[in-house]
Amino acid sequence: MTWLRTRCLPMAYLAVLATLIVVGCTSKQDPSEVLPLCGNHSCGELVMVTTDTSSDGYHYLNPRLSPDGTRIAFTCDWNALPSDPRYSGDDYFVNYRQVGVIPVQEGVNVVTHLADSGAELVKVQELSIPISGTADYQSGIVNFDKGGPTWLDDNNLIFPVRIRVGFRMFRADITNPATSTLTPLFLEPSDALASPHLWQHMEPTLSPDGRWLAFTRSGCAIPDSFETCSGLAIWMLDMSTAEVNNGYGAHAFPVTTEYSRIETPAWSPDGSKLVFSGGMDVAGQRGVGTELFTVDFDTTGLATHTMPLDRNLKRLTNTVVMPGDPIVGVLNTSPCYSTDGSEIYFVSTRRAPSITLHDRNIWRIPATGALDPEIFYFTRADEADPTICPDGSMLMSSALGFPTEMLDRLEEEAYQRIYQDNLDHNRGKDEVQMRAEAADSRRLLEFFEGVMSHLYLYRP
Image 1 (cartoon, rainbow, N blue to C red):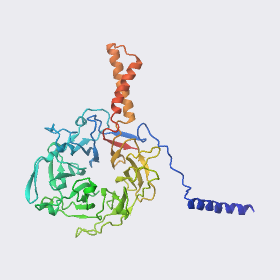
Image 2 (image 1 turned 90 degrees about the vertical axis):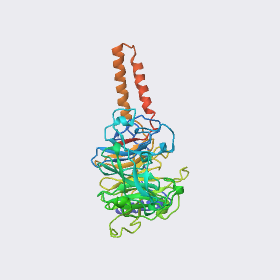
Image 3 (image 1 turned 60 degrees about the vertical axis):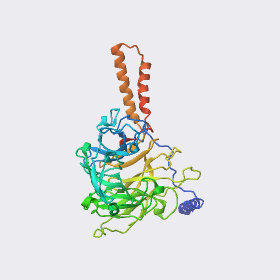
Image 4 (image 1 turned 180 degrees about the vertical axis):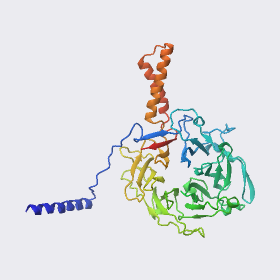
């Protein structure tokens, strides 16, 4: 009867598995609660692009690599990059954000100011545009609030600027960043009226072929304040019509329905899909938090610049909040595709293994949404705005501060300087004293963890 016992073993296993499923258990192995780190970040090569100690609160966000791979455009706090002259008072505009560019560099030297790393302010020139029924001269536009940039080509950026009718998309010629000229890409028909509607155009992202500019459009009284927003949707600008008649002749149209919350669209490498973060009503549900979705994009409606809304809308993430978790809604945002389109990376406030805090870290998921997300990059600080570079490295913003390996090297270099000075000037310091002084210089840099958001390149 040995053959009967052998044949019954698989049946017995299936019966036990079915029982486990019925009672709510699973045979899937629990994820490890041990998160491997190399120093103060996930293992891999971490290059610090901005290495300044300018302040106790500057944040460098929305980094985007230029097509030739030599520069990074990003947003920064108003005072981070000086223009001439910088205002010394405390008017409203000092809370606005500006756009800067910095060379791609292997961050090795700590500098006092961001400009010491070669960063430049995109200092835009005054312009006159036809809005509100007049030729409105935009005086002081260099200080106006600006949003995250995207590259049109190596000498031109696209980013939103807050003008009198709300944020609008402009092309900035940065051949010389100190004297950049602005050109409006798309203006609302109502912008020409004496009492225009306050639409906001934000988060531009250019298609891989450069033909289409996706952006979020909303009717927000206060930008980034969802309590005052309505009509949030992803819109598309046909770049072949951009700038026509000061932007009034440009063709733009929606590709999604209007939802309570929709943000951070990004293109697939082949330009056939957009991935974005949306509220629960995008999935036809109610609740707190955001999930990731994809929507197809094609040129079926090109002749009329209209397309089916929410074409093949698909939900990728289904975040489960554990019982007793004080965080009611988890935010999944800022998605971007891998270079081959097989994976999507995004920022999430879901709980990382081995910690109970909900810091913003970077996770990844198959582009099909077929598997649960897994953590990709972790620190005990906030990460933001990841993008994947052509070589597969990740460009991002993080409040990590100085990486451990960089601190180790800087501490050793400090010790060598102290040792040589002690030898040259016969200062009488012993080994313990010299090591303590070097450790003190390290602690000054450790202060910046969680204080400033710097730019990094990560190569796992």
